[in-house]
Amino acid sequence: MNFKYLYYKFIESVTYRYNQISQKYPKFKRNAIITLACLGLILLGILIYFVYFAKEKVVEEKQDMITVKVKKAKKEDYKDTYTTMGTIKGAVENEMRFELDGQLASYNYKEGARLKQGDVICSLDPKDAMTKADYAQSKYKSEVSAYNSAMERYKVYEELYRMKALSESKLYEAKYEIQSARSKVKAALSELELSQSNLAKTNMLAPSDGILAEIIIKPGDYITPQDVIAKFISDKGTNFEVDIPEKDVHKLAVGQTVTINCDSYHGKEFYGTLTEIAPTVKERTRTSTIKVSVENDEGKLRSGMFGRGVILLKELKDVMLVPNDSIVSLGENAFLVPVVSPDYRTPGEGTILMRPCQLGEKLTDKTVVEQGIQIGELVVIETQGQLSDGMKVKFLEAIEDTVDTTPKK
Image (cartoon, rainbow, N blue to C red; front, top):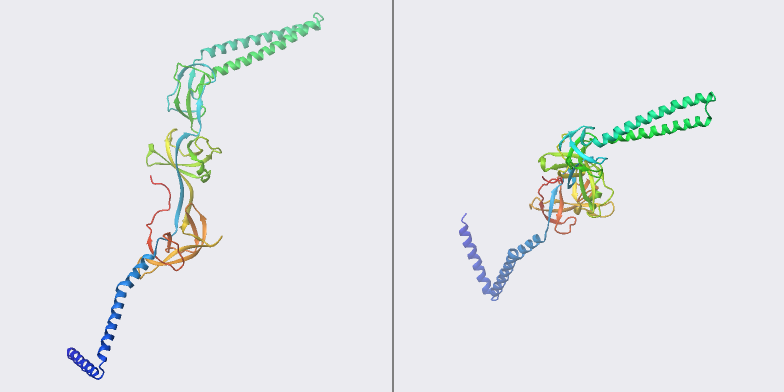
């Protein structure tokens, strides 16, 4: 079919008809022009609206749309920890002192030596103590001899008294001599025991199995019972001691697990249990001291070492968590959590659904959700404005991160 021919035929027919109507109705031509002009203006207006104003409105609507950050709901493990710094110390640290005055003679071990209970650490010059012990021994023997003599004399006096050859007063006198001699023997025995005890105290013995940590006074010095001679650390255990600010003490409890790292053993972890929390607060520093019993079977941790501890406050397994700020409370037991239903026709946009949920334990900055949210749903974790059910929003998915709050080494 020849479309060009039909087109020209149509134009010729319209022109002919137009000329006929114009001759019959003189005003038709003017009215037609006005009508065509009006239609042209209307079409131009519609074109301008769709090209400019409608586009601007769509852009404006899109600009007014709230942007939220979302995260896919999933089950995960949760750890809440408290990081601190402290000092390694022996569970029992002894400041060793002699009970006697005297000159320090010698040490039998060097610093750092391991000792068994009863080993002689060091000794005082025993000369004076031995002299006193010898004198007390001699005196005791003398008093025992005097007592024996008094007993023999009393037996003789008693026989004479029976024979009426001795007065009763002499017999009582002999009896009193026995009592006096017995008292002197007891006093001499006490003096002997004291002198022997003092002689034994010239040797300083290890109170238990442990380590001679530090030698303070060198041989040759004259010492008194007030002087600390050495420091001894018992093998009864190792502690990690930390001063905790008073505002954080309420977070801690006896029995919590602690992981400890020391610069001396990079990459090695030591484990312990919180065993003691001081009941008082230091006025100057406003801190309380805690003690952690540490496993130190290999003896690598030494008293005085600096350590970093991570205290495990709480641990949950396989739970679903949402930020506390995302939860909308409707009352004591009614809670809503906003989730985004994606619009797959427009990537990055979706609709807010306020989902009723049953909540569990509330943590520091998150709350456990027990029911109401399905795994994989997009939960709102941050928003730029107030949300409501059915609201259109833009959303950005948060980068996955771990919930374990243990600090990086």
